[in-house]
Image 1: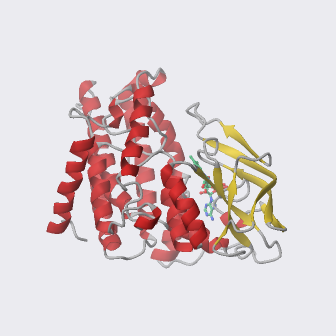
Image 2: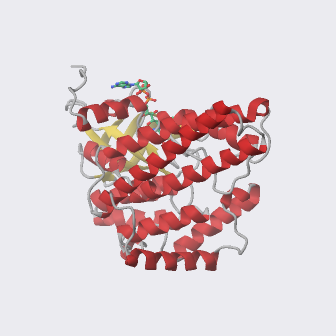
Image 3: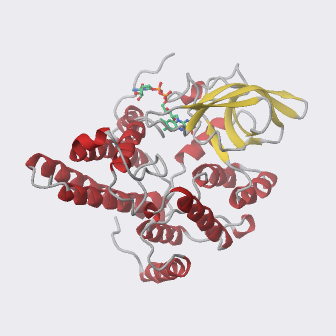
Amino acid sequence: MQPTYSAEAEAYREKVQAFLAEHLPPSWGGIGTLEGEALEQFTREWRQTLYENGLLAQSWPKEYGGAGLSALESVIIAEEFAKAGVPSGGSNDVFGIQMLGNTLLSWGTDEQKSHHLPRILSGEDLWCQGYSEPNAGSDLGNVQTRAVLDGDEWVINGQKIWTSAGHLANWIFVLCRTDPDAPKHKGISFLLCPMDQPGVEVRPIKMISGESEFNEVFFTDARTAKDNVVGGVNNGWAVAMTLLGYERGESAATMPIRFRAELDRLIAMAKERGKDTDPRIRDRLAWCHTRVEIMRMNGMRTLTKFLAGQAPGPDASISKLYWSEYHQQLTELAVDVLGADAFAPTGRKPSSSFQTDDPGAPNSSASWTDTFLNARAETIYAGSSQVQKNILGEMVLGLPKEPRPA
Ligand SMILES: Cc1cc2nc3c(=O)[nH]c(=O)nc-3n(C[C@H](O)[C@H](O)[C@H](O)COP(=O)(O)OP(=O)(O)OC[C@H]3O[C@@H](n4cnc5c(N)ncnc54)[C@H](O)[C@@H]3O)c2cc1C
């Protein structure tokens, strides 16, 4: 583990800080200070600023609109953006840039890269992830959505579920079964499919918070061009794993920053409400403090590996399990500090259901209760806690493999 940065990295940090000072308002307090139209406008304009400066997909080659920066430079940018409380892109960029774009750089043909990557960056195409099905979540290899070649096109039939942002996207990457006779993981292809066609129907699912961020997606004779297969026909499992395993080093650097700021905000709220003298609350706050510190150390370890060019291994499961289980405890504590106010939430709500509320957000009851509800899903998405424990047991601790169905 290397807890300090090189002089070269620190010099680059100054450049990033100068960029932020030039492009943010003088009294900037973090995106959490904005709401409604002001928030939407800032997010739109900020993404455009990053796009114009080649900072949306910093590590991508310049020919595809990236900045060709090193892993270290990307990490410094992510850290400084997290500290300043600004996002590193728009809300869809996790699907377009982080998931699909990076995967296309590994597996895409030249035509796929030159067509799709610039359109992702310009915002012309918004993507969503069509992996899960009613009978294929943890057991993803069980996907049953079928794709059959008909001349120059694939014809797709089946259903996906939990498709985040599916109602906003115009393209979906879909795991389809293309050889039903092959063993489970060998007959799958990774297809790119336009959503703006009669054969694709998106139905929203209402969440516990009352919002609808994810959907069911039904394919009924939906069509996509023959060339829209990534990584070769029946080789989709390998492509799907590249996409799932793609973990940028930045999250190891930024997550502890965001969780630290969130915990400090909770401590401030406990003080405001006179709960900081309650020994049971103090005990739980101390527990949270130790967890955030451990996350910071673990982040440095992951970051050191990432900067040394090592691919993320099963350690990614340690981090996923740790932060998601921690966050449920933290948000339960926040609701206990709120007391009866948690039953009638008021004030600014979080702008997204992912992890913490935005940096700079006020200590409103709606901020904490929504984050509390959203945290319920964190031990499920991106692989449930039980699945992470299986990975750690089998791949890190070398325990016997769990029995698999025949
Ligand atoms: C907020 C949210 C957003 C999501 N967004 C997307 C998206 O955009 N695109 C997409 O494709 N999917 C998405 N998902 C789906 C997500 O990937 C799945 O929910 C997840 O993989 C779990 O699958 P499942 O829901 O089918 O549960 P199941 O796999 O049916 O699991 C049910 C329970 O059984 C346990 N379990 C399953 N297998 C084992 C095992 N082998 N050993 C021990 N326990 C086991 C699980 O841990 C869980 O507790 C999203 C989910 C959520 C909650």
